[in-house]
Image (cartoon, rainbow, N blue to C red; front, top):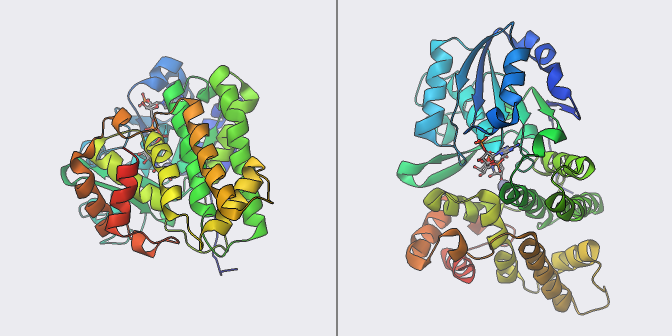
Length: 387
Ligand code: NZQ
Ligand code: ZN
């Protein structure tokens, strides 16, 4: 077991009606709030009006229109400018992972005199960040319980994971009823994203029985509840369990003491959404089984055996390679059964830029140091197999 350091300072308020606690959460953090949100879902659901009413005693400034795969120039830069102009004390992110991720970058940029990209690209280490509170409305990224945000810079085809302990939210308010209105496309994609977060931590060595158990339980929780919410979007119990599992799945608690995996599927997917602005969870679902097939060999097969027998109950007496093949097929079938498009062509990506993307990934994502190392050629073959 490896040494590790772990500290999550975020308070979780989870359950029906927790949004009502917002004033009490915000009061110790200051009077001047920047409220950030996306393209309108919170207005349609009534959450916007509820939040505005709850925040009557505060001075609230608004940054609307944060886009999926949040953009540096269009959203981070204006947000930082607003924080500085209005001497903002605290950021309140209301929406999905994109809104919160963007708010994290704004929080750091607001406390820095230079160009915020210096921080996001790790040229400069942030010394401070504004406090962040969120009302998360989409079960997927786990941004509500982690120290990261992912920012896209369209001009350079970059999509960068920006991680710093300063970016943990102070408090995340998580009401599963707010997730009832997530459309089927994003419900599916969110589940695939969280499943992939678990897999990125599971497929590494060394590992522990404890971590393996938590990972398999998290995957079972998501896979058991997924068809339930697809059939009935207002199934509170299923939405709630999915939401909490997503919250835990990107926090790192499932891999304390494990070896580093290098998060290869995310490394590949980030280029897909940087170049083509696709939905993150769909890109991951497409890549996952192809990555699995590509890295399956005598050295890696043991992990697939633990995965296949633990998650799918595949007969442990079968030859290891057969267990692995069945497990990969079942992973593919699950995503397909949920209704996720399972080829790159279906999400608008053809062969034209695969080589360019493979090169970009190989140069920027460090996947040659992953648990199952990938060269540029490997990455290209995974992309080709995903077409
Ligand atoms: O913009 P609005 O109108 O709010 O609509 C959003 C958006 O169109 C909608 N939505 C959100 N909650 C809703 C809802 N619609 C109806 N009812 C609700 N309750 O859903 C759409 C997608 O939202 P988005 O925030 O983009 O989705 P998600 O939460 O999946 O976030 C994706 C982003 O997070 C990054 C991804 O790369 C991507 O940029 N990630 C962040 C991570 C992190 N911080 O740790 C880890 C992940 O691996 C991931 O990379
Ligand atoms: Zn993800």
